[in-house]
Length: 331
Image 1 (cartoon, helix red, strand yellow):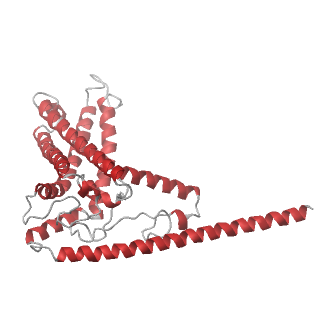
Image 2 (cartoon, rainbow, N blue to C red):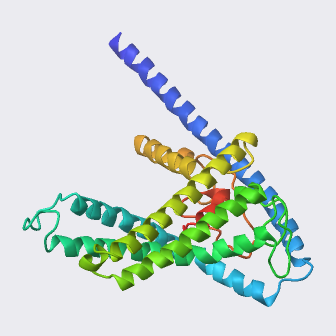
Image 3 (cartoon, one colour):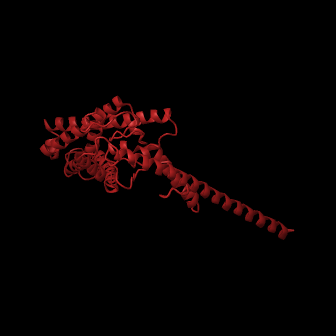
């Protein structure tokens, strides 16, 4: 009797395993079909938009070629990874600065743990590192901010259409959600972000004039350094929050039209990581491979008619069609 039960259990296990394999095979087949269909649509869109780019009147000018070359370099993976590395250093240096600021340190105690050497020198070094990284990010993002400002304002030379859904070349139906934010609101965002860059450059200048702890914490150095530091942070925060708000409105009004935003992309990446960790053998069905086979099929449309993008159209943060907004922050 026991042997018969064991035989039945083995048969059931084999059936379950076979059903699981068949289910995984079906998922792979469905994903392959979706990926192939999506590629077909993307190829048609590429051809159509490339034709529009070649038919531009007037044709692409020398100044536009120069701008595009610069923006392509700033869109490269190298620059994107440098941006991520900069964020990591900001977090570490910021935490170090904060603990020194509140006196949570064991470097010295005389005359007090809030004002002593070498604590003051270390705190000043952390500030200089933070300011330097913020300046780097402002330099990297400024060309894209300026290009977008000229395009939205209609001041580009030659003039290209800045109607809703048009990219910097005036080609409509761009998949990037940034192109669908109303013009006046986009202009407001860009003005705030350009002010962020300008105030950051002034902030960096004050750190050259008042380079050490003593001069930057005594009048008038403390006034100049604090004013521009707060102004830069306020402008950056307002610009980032405004973009997230506008993109959230668009995704609510037009569900399914745009790819996931940075926050949704991060949540998806965490969920995919957890799913892969929970099911080590689920690579074929839960992975998010570059070829699109297996896993959640994210229907991100390429930007074939956008010469400002790097050739691989990569986004290290996986923002899909929301790349323009990230470029405003050197990401």
